[in-house]
Length: 273
Image 1 (cartoon, rainbow, N blue to C red):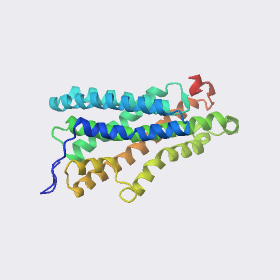
Image 2: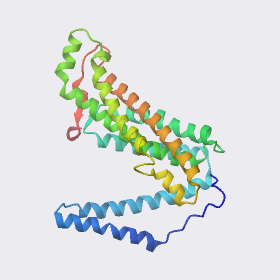
Image 3: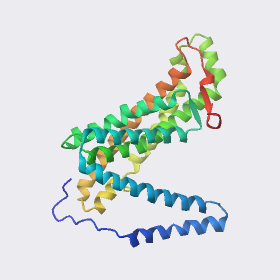
Image 4: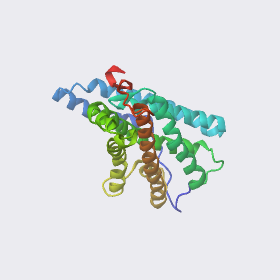
């Protein structure tokens, strides 16, 4: 990306600057101790994990960016999608048999396709599989998409578990599985999409989104940064919406079979999975 003329270069950060920011987290630790929140251990663990994970990812990305190899790019995309699938299912209080495969396929067909399309067609990256564009785009799409998927699954599976009697009654009275699942599915998809809608509503007024802020700090023109941020927001909205719909349809097909019977044994509370 080329910034506007006169755009400043990014200011390189040294270890002591990052360390100074880390020291500020001690404020949160003091609050935890003072209020007996018992979160100080988790704060320290979170800081350590974030530091190690991000450093490893940074070094790996530097190497991957230097290769620009199709197989390597897609291997990295696959690993990211697998990790996002696991995170999405872990956040939900409910699971369904075959849920991992369904969520993984959904993320590949939504976030994966959108990331490639965004980089290759909208941004015009050369080559189209350039990891410098494909990986950051997928990361942002997955980060938001997994939240939507987990909220959608949590709502839908919870509705099937808690409202089973009503759904069975609808089926007994002749409703198809899609008719019986229509209201829970609608509520679940809506719940999954609402966060990105809210994020778009306040973008630029209440908050400066992360990608835009990062580009500005890196010396890009604010107007160019806004363009990229809008592109990302719109890709996220489309990917998350399709992802929620896809995982919702998958869950309905798993729980309500072709004979229009509810298969409650396929739903598990997180502690029972």
